[in-house]
Image (cartoon, rainbow, N blue to C red):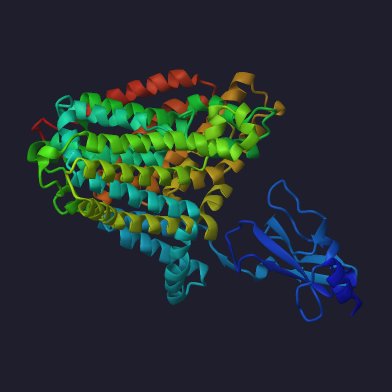
Length: 638
């Protein structure tokens, strides 16, 4: 045929070669009333794809929201994909000459939208009730797979193991976190075996002689490692755990301190590995009026009430040494009985790691631990700068430090740092002759093995998060059912972001889902016809943006399937479910204060600085009213 000759010459088929159009949804199901995506493929008389180049008309398709689909489709030798098509559209038709194709969304299997909430809620409830995080997460992934695969339990189970779980490690970022965690665990194994950890604890213990000073030291360490939440969790937890154990600070309290100075500080730090992602989302989603995404971030910064108040609350807990609820019981157990872990607890680290030590402790020195840890921090800081500079190329010379770090490959840098720290630990230990080279390698392997259980939980959490985000569209379904007024927009946005982060276990996924919707909504609700004065417009818009960031961190703190929550348990060697159960009342307390004194007033133009001061004062007051010191021997019901 002549069109085949033309195709061989130009790789582009004419209209005469097209007999019709195959229109198919990207999935064989739809969730609730959420929009769907369609792929339109030109085909020949045998139903085979044709590399058609030309135009076709689209009829009957309605867009979801304000964005309408194009009336004319342009083909360039490849299928065309249409996103955000209203599932309630009637018959959809594509025409080009005599070639036609049609599609009806009603033919798709429908999953009730409310069911998209069931997998994460089931995982969270089961984890809290039965203290079995692995089984709870696995059940959540399986239930999600069951819904996706036409409610077939066997197919859902098979796809859980052969599709959804392996997919978590195909992601290069996830794989980097796994290797970073293993390598850092190996470094901890070496510095423990060399006696450096114990020697460093002895040095710190001379200064941190009380539970108060121990908690303040841990809090300050969390603020120092502000540039990345993953590095913060693993570095701070592993570094301070030995001396907090000695000071009888419970592992639950340590995990809370670590978790609450990781994501909260990273999300408000003006230079961190989060900045590029957050600023990029702002810039892509909003009518910036010439302002950069970073400028929008800085203007939203004072409204990050939950993040700032959480950091202040950890300080208040440390200074007053007061606690309430499950944390008070954990702290009294540690203070009075010396049990930093609950009897029967399952810490996310092999207990054998803590029992390692050198044959000759007299050769140990605190630098065997301090220098590897310092090298990790130094490599991360230098690596972020060098990686960003390399990525920017010629633009590096005119770029700011913030832009350079935003352009860096943080996952690669974390890998450099963790393996570099392990190398430094091995070299120092062997050079000082506290261990032989083979013993150092064995200690490194023992350290990596101690992380296996935590990484298994992390992989399942990622699988469940991906199921909620990309298969069941949990976050999108929640948002589609919310239409707040302008004044309530910051508060509702905070609550919705928290709920999505709780369900998905991911701050970044929550931000990516909510910012493109809540941001434009805030701008539209405070437009020229709103009648609001400029100060109120500024307050509503930027408190809404900050509510997404802080709400994501809040939900992340409450979720047992959150990666940073798991990593905090891992680095603190705490029982993961005990960590979640003791942290949740504190996270809810900070969230309630953030809403009552932060986001609600911000919706009416109240000063964020006064809100922060009032919120911090209230949190201190809460501790003095309902908090008790662990050292007290009064009723422990908490």
